[in-house]
Amino acid sequence: MSHQFDEAVRKADVLLEALGWIRQFRGRHVVIKLGGSTMEETAAVKHFLTDVIFMSSVGMRPILVHGGGKAINAAMSKAGIAPRFVQGRRYTDDETLEIVAQVLAGEICQGLVDEIIRQGGDARGLSYQTVNCLLGKRLTLPGENGEPIDLGRVGEVIDIDRDLLLMTCREQQIPVLPSVALDEQGGKLNVNADTAAAAVARLIQAEKLVFLSDVPGIYLDRKDPSTLQSHLNAARCRELIKEGIIDAGMVPKVEAALEALEAGVKKVHIIDARIPHSVLLEIYSNEGIGTEIVL
Image (cartoon, rainbow, N blue to C red):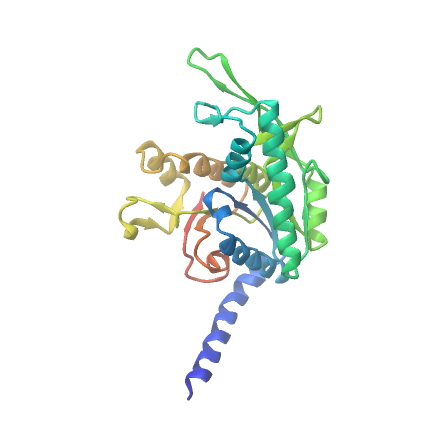
C-alpha cells in the first residue's frame, strides 16, 4: 500500500476519533478566553479563529471573551498617560477607561469579528458599542485596616444578558465579548478578562471554560517540562496555590476556574495558544495537550 493511502486512512481514523467528541459536545457551550501575549501573535490568533469556526460548524457553541493588556499599554503611552497600579491592579481613571474601552471594544473585538467573517464564519461583537452583554459593579480591594481601596473604574461581572448571548449562539453566530462591563447607571467598567470569562461560563453553566495562555498549562516545576499536569482536581489546585507552586498571574485564573466548576461548569482547560490547533486537540482528541481541571 502506498504512503498516500496510509495517510488517507490515518486521516479517516482521526475524523472517527473526533466523531465521538463532536457528538458529545453538539449544542453545548464552551467559553474561551483569549488574551495576554497570545494576542500579539497574529498567525496564532488566525489559526485559533479557524478552530473556533470548526467548532461552530460541527454544532458546538463557542463564546469568545478577550482582554488586551499590551495593546492598552501601547495606546496609553501614545496618549502620554503613565499606568498606575494599586496592589497589582491597573488603576483606571476616566481618561484611562476611554482608551481601555476603545482598544478592547473598538479595535480588538472588531478585528476578531472581521477575521472570523473573512474566514467564512459568522460572528457578532457584543459590547457597549453594539449590544451590551456584560453587567458589572465597581470592585474595591480591602486595605490593611479593612478600609476599601478605590481602583477607579475597575469592576467585576455580576450578571450577563443571558437571552442575548444564547440567542446569538442559536443563530450560529460566534459571540465576541471584550472585557468591558456596564454598571447600573450605564457607566463603563474595566474588568479582568479571566474573571469575566469565568463569570460567563458560570452564568450559562457552560460545558467547558478554556483559558488560552502563553504557557502549556500548570507545571509542578516550570523549569522541568515533564512536570506538566494534564489533569488536576479542585482540591489539588488549592494545595498547589497554598504551596506557592501555582503563583503570580496563574492564581486568579485558577481561582476563577474553581468558582466556575463549583457553579456547574463541567471542565476547565488551560492550553497554549502558540501550538497550532491546540483548542481542537484539547477538545476533540483522546490525548489532550494542556491542563484540564475538574471538581
